[in-house]
Structure formats: structure tokens, C-alpha cells
Length: 120
Image (tube, rainbow, N blue to C red; front, side, top):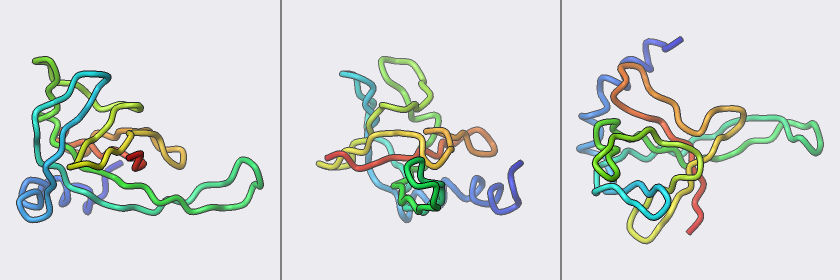
């Protein structure tokens, strides 16, 4: 269930993009979207190691992506594990983290929170 803070962040999303946004594209296989503005947010998640059973912290490079800008091949798509966000020469693969799905639609339905790992 979304908290009051989640709702405020969703409402402020467009305003924040103008101040802290990055020009990125989204790649799905060999196809790529046009450039759009995303917001970067490094987050720390806690999970339990499958090998040791001990708690571990994972740092994820999370992006907030505007849902309306996720267009590839003329179709609006949902971000999913395996897709890649390109920011300049850096590439970030979308993947699940700490028991959370790779992409989470935010309250209001106009932004996606995606968890990534820098791969290049």
C-alpha cells in the first residue's frame, strides 16, 4: 500500500526531473527508445544471503522512468528484467533486487521504479 511519502514523490516526479534528471534511452534487444529524462536514485536494500543465511546489504542504481516515454517501435512498453538503460556511455541492466521485482509501477501509474546494475 502506498504511503503518504510515496504519493508525494509521485506527484513531485515531473518537477524533480527538471532538476535532477538524466537523458537516457531504454534498450529492448536490438531496439531502442528515443531519449527521455529519468531520475537516478541509488538505494540500499537488505536481504538474506542464500549461501550463508546472513543479512547482506545490496546497493542498487534505481531509476524513475516516465511511463509515457517508454516507447519502442511505436508501442508503449513496460520495463522488464534484461532490458538496458543507457546513459551516455554507461549501461545499466534492469533486474530484480532483494526479493523485489525488476520494475515497480509507482502510485498514479505515470512512473516506473526500476532496479539496475551497471554493466558497462
